[in-house]
Length: 304
Ligand SMILES: NC(=O)c1ccc[n+]([C@@H]2O[C@H](COP(=O)([O-])OP(=O)(O)OC[C@H]3O[C@@H](n4cnc5c(N)ncnc54)[C@H](OP(=O)(O)O)[C@@H]3O)[C@@H](O)[C@H]2O)c1
Image (tube, rainbow, N blue to C red; front, side, top):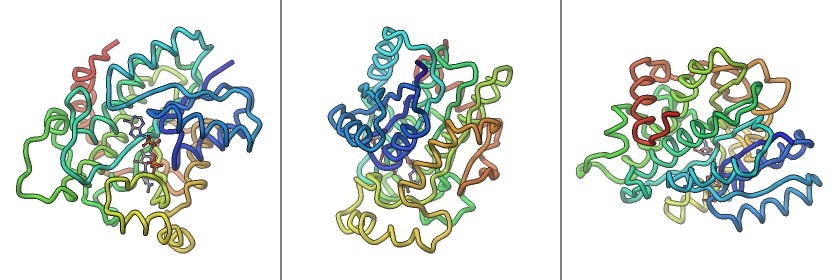
């Protein structure tokens, strides 16, 4: 049986992606890679009830820990699966509070949203199906020209993003938003670099923008009033605002892009609002791509 892996599958867009995947990938095993196994198993119960899919399982994965990422891959390898037909790097977070760090000492947003998925993907490459698909959930906030209401990204270099110096003059929420949007730029840069490195293969690597998707768990670090609006009021915006979607729509699009035959010709693209569009000019910057790739390999020690 071939395998599909979805990170952050217990919540928000990842949960909805897994639900859709269970409908369209009936013969594949689907692994929910979650940091909280109980939450992952609860998601499995709900998806099983809705779809009857018989091959769903949760494996523990904390993307803020290189040790956990290696353990995940070791467990996966021991289980002797056939091959991975889709790897959906969806998990992510925003931290607009005080700076936090992963267990390896990386700034938590960059560590979890970029270095973690980067390391996971590198370590899982030997298990990829020759016609497999790798996706990175990015965001339109990676593009400074889009009016998203978020602080625009600033790519400096990996060392600086992983080990930022103190920013005493700026507010935590500004710094936190910029770290988030920059980490999403890194997702797009990584997708393009990886596709280039896999140019001689049939594996496709793409970046996905779900659009503004209110109602998910992404705003955990925001004040209670914002969390309330996000859950209860902002979903109304999906009725009239461009590229603003309910989690079910974003998750369905993500699963379809990763697995559906309809999209199996798409390679090295950025998919937003249901179509292929150009990503930000920074995302095509070859110097950024090279610095990000080379230094991420070094920091995660995943040069296979
Ligand atoms: N919602 C939006 O408007 C929006 C827009 C553009 C892009 N995105 C992107 O969409 C993706 C999914 O976000 P969402 O909105 O669906 O938010 P969400 O409901 O909070 O889902 C995020 C998922 O990532 C998991 N996660 C966080 N830190 C992790 C770690 N260290 N290790 C493993 N898993 C971890 C979370 O696990 P827990 O449940 O344990 O916290 C959760 O399952 C993210 O990459 C986000 O950047 C979202």
